Length: 257
Length: 257
DNA sequence: GATCATATTTGCCGTGGATCAAGGCGCGGG
DNA sequence: CCCGCGCCTTGATCCACGGCAAATATGATC
Image 1 (cartoon, rainbow over the protein chains, first blue to last red):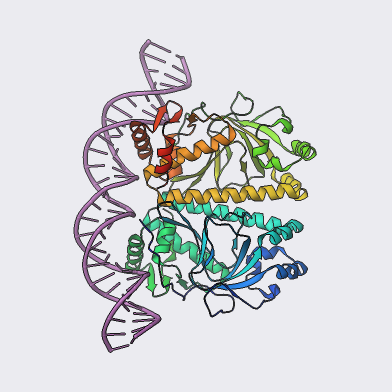
Image 2 (cartoon, rainbow over the protein chains, first blue to last red; image 1 turned 45 degrees about the vertical axis):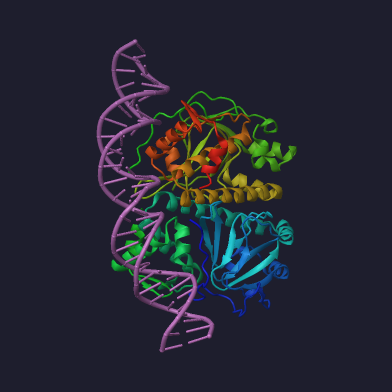
């Protein structure tokens, strides 16, 4: 099952909490916002910092903008940077020797890339739509971390929370049928976006059907059929750039098995 | 698919690195070993401690022995303790509302239970065979942690490593067929046990076939059939208490897809 | 050693989701 | 406006794995 690379990503729909950056060709540097007024501060590791620490870390970070389909880090390579995602959506994936892909998660604003603080990259991270991120030199970040116990504690809590989330996903992959997988995907995504934006009526699906399939351990056809079926059952409405949930209760029940 | 609870576990085969404890009925207190001479010290979080810190933590820990099928912690409940596993094997599992079970991992000596440091237990932990563990009061442990940055750093590294391992397992669950799942299970278990004991000729399978199935997202019949097939192909030999790998190379290739 | 309980294996058959194939849709470029 | 290229959908068929049931192995108890 060789990967066919998608070529024209959607640039719409995704969550965007920060300013725009117009051009492709490597990440574009953004003028520095004050961390103080960062919209994802309380969602990210930075919530552990007080105002003075915040201005310290501001000097360590480089706010960047990644265009759709650009790569933040590539599995198997090494990297000396870590990221704090502040806008857009990032696809995190691993590839099997035979080319099959498993998407292990979608990073949204507030998420941190590089929790393991090691130089070896174990999963790829690609911008799905326009992505804003604060980039840090890993060494500088580690040093800063060593000097700020509350931040270290926050990193630990975040990593543990990611671990729990990974376990949730194991349950989905190992024990749910196609309906259950797609239903819980929609519900989970809704809940996640609700923590960031507060508009939940419409769920933008910035990722492709193939991405969803690779996330849920299904094929693109099964994802498409299942969504069509849900639409036929009046559980959702499929729009050009996402879905609207009509019967969240029923979806939640479906998602339980 | 209601769970039928196994009733008579094997008490053999599993890894045992610490002393024996004869009786069931709640965990049995063990005389305290010196942490200094603990056989899993360098595998566990304790590797971050120097001799003086080691004797400090020794006073916080209670070495216990759990009999097969006893429960260290139960999903959905709360707990004020955390564990360092020093002997035996522990089954970590989650249960879906409809009773289906997903085993999210098998803890072996050196592994830590309670990485999230929260009071809510998100997965059950049950002794598969006789298990030895050092138990800590969570509050006391957290306080100790706050005073020992190197230990905190070690916890973080361990949590991140668990996260990576969880991602590996997502790939297995989402993208591998039955042969690939069973083959990588055997190879991974072998590699893991090799880090602890150094005898690798024979892999003891302390867990039941049902456990393996619930770990790999398969049914017990498929696990059994696959193992039989591997045996017929001379890749393994099935013994009463485990398997012996005959053709590790071929298994490794099978495990790649 | 006989009995019993549970775990495991094996055969048979059904099905959910994969695979193969054929359009349809949306969008950017000429 | 038309064309071409991906993405998405839908239908038809296949097959790996699940579900069921019966046979067998293992180990515990008396």
